[in-house]
Image 1 (cartoon, rainbow, N blue to C red):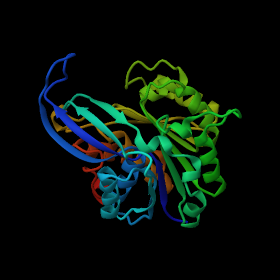
Image 2: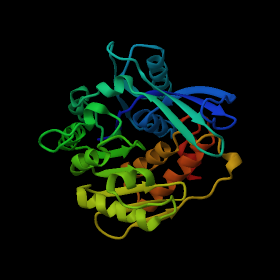
Image 3: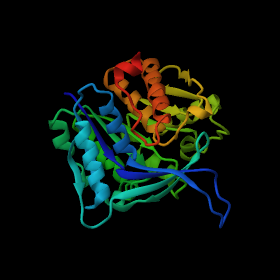
Length: 325
C-alpha cells in the first residue's frame, strides 16, 4: 500500500495584511491581498505534494461550483494531487475565509463554511481510497465539519463513523483539531477519540478539549497532561501537541518526547496562516515512513518555519530534501 488521503475542510483563504488592528468602527489600511488554498485537508495534502516525494496523494471533500472551487482544482492539478474525490455540489458555495493578518503578530479568521458543512460520511469513498493503496487517512478539522461533528444517540460522532470505516479498510487515522470556541467542542472530541490513531492539536485546542489549564505556549507540563487525558479518552497511538515554542509527542506507552522550536525573528514571519498544518504534514510524512518521533517532530517544525515565510498557507513549502538538509 502507498499513499495518503486527506479529507475534510477545503476552502480559499483571502489573506488581507493590515497595518494595524482596528478599533470598533475604525478604518485600517490593507497593505496586501492574496488568495490561496486553505483548510486542513487542502493545506496538508498540498504541503505533502510540495515535498516532491512522488507519494500518491488524494484530495477528498466538497466544494461549490464557482471560481473558488476552480482555484482549488487548479492547485491540486498543478501539485499532482488526485482530486477525483474533491466533489462539487450545486447546493452550496465553496467555503472561504477572510484572514486578517498582522505581520509578526497574529491572524484572525472570518469563515464562511459553505459546502464544508454538507460533508457527510457517505461523501467519502473509503473503500475506493483503500483500494487505491492509501495507508493514512487524514481528517481535518474536527469541530469545523457540521455533519461530521454531530454526536448521535449512540454517543459517536459522524467523524467516528467515518474513521471507523477507514480503520476497517486498513488505514491509519490522523485527525487535526481547529481553534474554534463552538459549543460542544470537547464533546465532539470525546465522541471521536476511540477511532483516532494520531491526534494533532495546539495549546488552545488542548485546553478546550480537556479542560486542562494551559496558560501559554510554553507550558509543557500542562500540554503533556492534556495529552495524557486525551489518551485516556481513547486516542489509540499518540497525541501530538504543537505550539510556537515546542512540540510534544505523548505516546500511549512510554515517556513523552519534547522538541523545542527554533525561535524566528518577527521580521522574518510574513504570515502564520497554515503553519500548524505544515507542521502536521511534516509529522504525518514521518509517521508514514515509520520515523522515530523526534525526527518526525523536527521535520514538522522545519515545515512550519518555512510556511511562516509565505503569505499563503501552502506557498512557502520547499522540497523535502531542502527541509532535511
